[in-house]
Amino acid sequence: MPRLFLPVEENPRTIHITGEKAHYLASVLRCKEGEELEILDGKGHSYRAKITSIVKKEITADVLGAVTHSTESPINLILIQGLLKGEKMELVIQKATELGVSKILPVVTERSQVRNTGKTGRWRKIAEDASRQSGRTAIPIIHEPVAFRDIFSGDSPYAPYFRKCKGLLFWERKGIRMKKGMESLEGCRSLIVAVGPEGGFTEGEVQVAEDHGFLVASLGSRILRAETAAIAVIALSQFLFGDMG
Picture 1 (cartoon, one colour):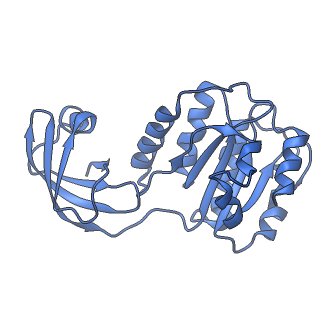
Picture 2 (cartoon, helix red, strand yellow):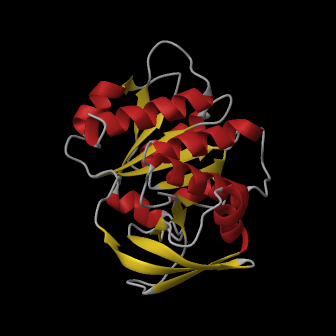
């Protein structure tokens, strides 16, 4: 059954699909009248619907009922990711979505080789496609990039994250082993993990994070590429606290 993310009102009776998504269903998947779809609103609700008409660039479907299953992780996992070059950032967003993160906060750090980007829209599209492919019922929030130090300021819109969640920052130069760090967070249901860009975080950035309650952790003696580290951290977090164990 084709799955489609579409913003719809809660408990809809009829759904109208237009634009790129109508083209995808009609021209790419070659859906016909009478076929069933699963429509997801990206916020955790999903509905089973039957196509009743395909006219030019619009598809109409009648809602048959709500789908009650959820594939979302029990842990609210937030990734702070130092901006990476080109396809590396896209890879992290795709795999982090598949692994169940709830939010991704790209940050510009002192060692970021990328400092300006207009790719947030593309990243959100990658996250939507990855959510659909992996069977998720929600799409992670992809924030606009901000300076790393700014996210900790008192008037930052991200400040509530740090009040509600515990945090681990991963640094190749020092830190407790991840297993020990995770043991100290046993039972947590909200977790922020921070991974630097190519070249990692600076000492000053690590100190700022520590001053705001983050534990500094290590992934071992080998130095991992930034994109490898992000994927490994998320997978291990889901294994220990989420739904991969």
